[in-house]
Image (cartoon, rainbow, N blue to C red; front, top):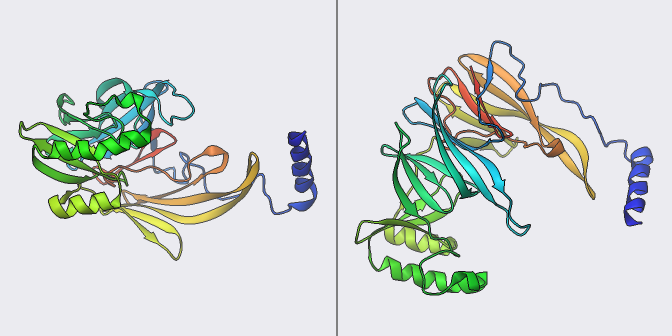
Length: 328
């Protein structure tokens, strides 16, 4: 009965009381991956069936693009946000040809996952462990265990404890481990991933331990210092206009306007919806396009984790809705 009453009220409001609500709002740019400049080619990068892009990285040498994709293979119960996935680690050359594909099956999904380059290794940071791969061959060179707040070395059976009990045991277990470590540093993960401890014990074995809160971060940073993966300067934000810009030498991507897209029913409420109009300058050519958060679409396009847009400066790499694109 409640659903029927809600339906009638919604129908009446659409007919008589909601002239400003737009079911088909207008904006004058093509929806990405369509663009307004035929001189710029949009190329979709080939992925295996059912795989979507989690994150990607343009190498500092501007020769390769490393891409992490995944496919869900086992959903978890409603109280869990993640499940088991098959990951793939891909390496594309700057011209868009696929060079290497690495299979990583049946791993707990990490949201977010992180990629960066450490010396001659590609670092893949997931919730279960950190994996280092040779950048040339993508052969595994090191695995570093990640001890989360509910999975760490202890004599107690953590599976029998509730989260509050696990958290009580975590700080003393971490402190006991740190007593036998020759190196301790705070690692600031890219793209708002938070901070963790990267430690090396007396046997030169590395492990990673999460920091619990900001006071934890402050304490360990003051005592041991912080390291950060290298990043481009990143997005700039204009608080007066609410717009963003990302520059990478002669290539830039910016949000040129934010457009109201009316409201949309997201049961049981109507929610405001918007569109971002983007402008991309690549190889002295300008391309414009738009994205919207209507119908569950993401409002923002996705760029490289180290905020590089391009390799040679003649093309740009953008991901949207789980697909990686090369624009040239």
